[in-house]
Length: 331
Image (cartoon, rainbow, N blue to C red; front, top):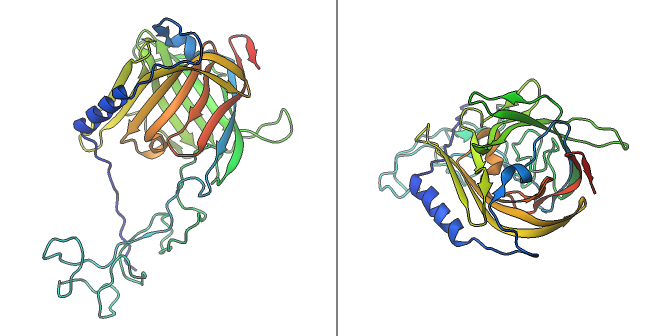
């Protein structure tokens, strides 16, 4: 049996980044549901980092289709010579009869033994798309609970328990860990782990590392391409920060953050006034960072941190259940 594996690379050009930036700047809304504070705002106040801080989250995936997934293998069809360059097979064009059935089989025809395909789950056999998620098919774990979710609600815990480290440029690195938790009150168990390294100082709010997976197979697509500059040390409504990694001209990774508004936010942890609302656009990320590609929104409360998050995929919402930050508990 012939098996063909194909890798695709996302190519992003500088014009795409610039057009996206122009679009975002043009869409900035200076709205507030209460008296407007006078900026600029110190990001240290809105993204607090400290040993012992904890945040508990309710995560909802409100989608009848569930989390995005790759449905089955890809039937590539038999190779052919596209003489008229129209992108499809026309009668009389030379082709390779991979399954020896005497006729041309395209990608829309039922797959048969010998026809090239992309083996998405690396199991050595062709799996036809069936409209539902099957074990071992790749999916984007939007709620970070370690398994494929359809419409669901789960809980996450973030905590900072280790001593801070020092980065190469002298900044203090804080490790934020994450796990799904469940069971009786006070119990917790880890299905997957998620470790993120941040610095927040005179160089701005920067994201240095994003490690996911298991102890035996960790992934970190950010370490060699970061740190992402998520915000300047101080920000005002209307400010924009652009990060672009151009180390690989074929796969430019970018992150654009816009402080778009101030809004009041009410979640399970309480009502928070004058939160900073950020709109972020990520493009070109691969590996365990690809789930951030697209547009997301984050709301940060003073002295608390992130209180609400809308991920790039439709129907994915995070809201803060409770927190213990800076010696104070919420609610």
